[in-house]
Image (cartoon, rainbow, N blue to C red; front, side, top):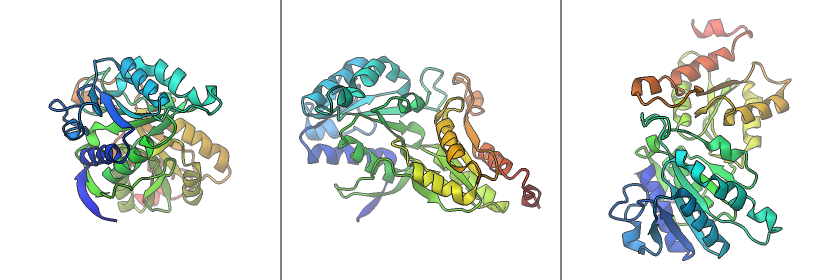
Length: 336
């Protein structure tokens, strides 16, 4: 499989380009996604495919998502962009009560094969209403699939799978990762199945579980833990719904310790569900309580110095990893 080094932004662009080429039913819609205004993953696509395939819309998230649902019912495969995740609440009724329920309410006769691309600006000091990671909202909705890639390769493969999935998929892109580079298969047929976690780093002593940007913090924390004699395994969930429960349980069963990390607020965040599953399945096998490291339960500050104190950091993850060693007679040895 031929690979090229590219940014996540370029990988997303390539996935959209190849989907538009592969299937005439695929089209894109959203605010400022057509040239010359497009500057993100949709740049150049309206010039190549025309504005009937890449549609600039009015500033109306409910209108964008509603149009996408109607088009999907009519047999198309829309990819709708909600520019900033905070604004997805405006389209919540369309997603929760229409798209997610369509298969159930028609006894399987009609599905909603729509992909909602949205972006999280967490960590860019954009303020309380432009920075939220709200993926936990949609994990709670039966019928919705929730995907959060951490690498360019995963972004391309997962977005391709989402576009051609029969159910509504919420595809969450992290702005802070869009310039990150990595090898990406350029083959048009490349995809990654939804619900398949990935071990980004093997280890034996503690499992660090994350998705999106938090995976990179977990990898940095794993380097620091290794210097202190702790071998950390890093598991990238990649999709939250469907969740690869088997992979997470298998890893934690081996390491007997777990730290779950995410940019969403820690209280009632995605990590709570993962922790509950692990506690139920591995209660007698765990060597320590499960740790969670999430964003603090406050509105996002607009000041960069304050916002930096809100989100998980490699240092906070290291501290949590070391706490999992409390009470088993080894932590003192970690510090020499």
